[in-house]
Image (tube, rainbow, N blue to C red):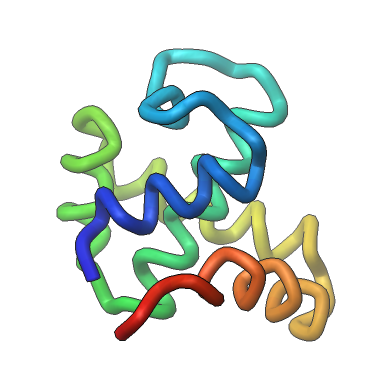
Length: 94
């Protein structure tokens, strides 16, 4: 699985224009999609924080950590996160 494929699936799930997720923006929808991408890439596919940050336009690894933590706070329950994660990953063949 490549980071680009995870990006496209995340953008599709959030109904975003392709290749917009890492544009410099603080719009709430983009920020949460970006953070969700960080979490999926790290926890489901094992990409390093540095690799994720580099792919996301040169973001520092601490930004990636922050995003992953924020998704955990927002989604709270593991079941709710799993629901969204499964929706994004359902078309991906591992």
